[in-house]
Image (tube, rainbow, N blue to C red; front, side):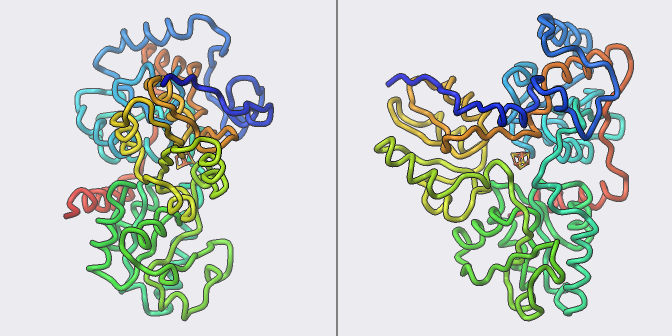
Length: 389
Ligand code: SF4
């Protein structure tokens, strides 16, 4: 069966959010400190190619799976956030690591690479709304509350890779571990061998899905800590009795899929396989046929038989790329509405060209650095993840 990719509804409002150069205010919040080439420049591809060739082995370009095609074509390697950070660490000869992803990923690359290497994020507006939902002062306040209740000593903090270096540092300082969507279960088992409860940051959905669906905990064992409410919106008894204290954070992309998205696609496409990321809500994950990380999703689609139908609940750039790479399979986006990661989409060809050409001119722009103390403790939590049984 052959299928043609059909772009979900590209409404004017959606395009406004995407920062595709159609919106003069799309860089609001963080100004580019230099002269960006106009998106209409027909020579952008040639300019990026020439600048990258001039830099040769001095630059290594990393491209996250959720990046635009126009950017991913220049990536030396593609992957999820953890794979990319490790790839950066495995290239000690590259002076410049140009990270086409979001801010927390560039921070992780800086932590894992040598002091000589410079990590560059082409657009500083490329943050992550999930990572931003857990700020260090908020997490410290929550921890102080656990200390006052006398339960901090029996609580192990676990943070998802998708968190700031500050949060990874906090977790490393307090005997915890970082996890990815591939090893969250192993990280939780490790944590429960060391404590009675886990403070899981910042993605409530990954925490709940792993605890309930993979560890066999009861939904009532999990409580939701809201950093915007006094005491997290929980009683002392709830905090003492909880096995999982879930931080109230979520991914703006994966959190959008609903049970009705799943039901609707099953009605529309009989026999469809529903494949989702564990950052999706509990009711979506339980209604899906397959659940796994970005790398898992890619492998599943690659291994799927010709003619099979797949509704994929993850970022749209990746789903579209998979659909185009596998025209013998029917691959569709799980939701009818457009759902790019707007911050991932901040990295576009003009920013990439600008960052590369500045390097050619001997100027390092948008360097991401993590202070040594934070980096040290974040590294402890990352190394602990690598040592998970
Ligand atoms: S897809 Fe979600 S978790 Fe990933 S960068 Fe975007 S907002 Fe953050």
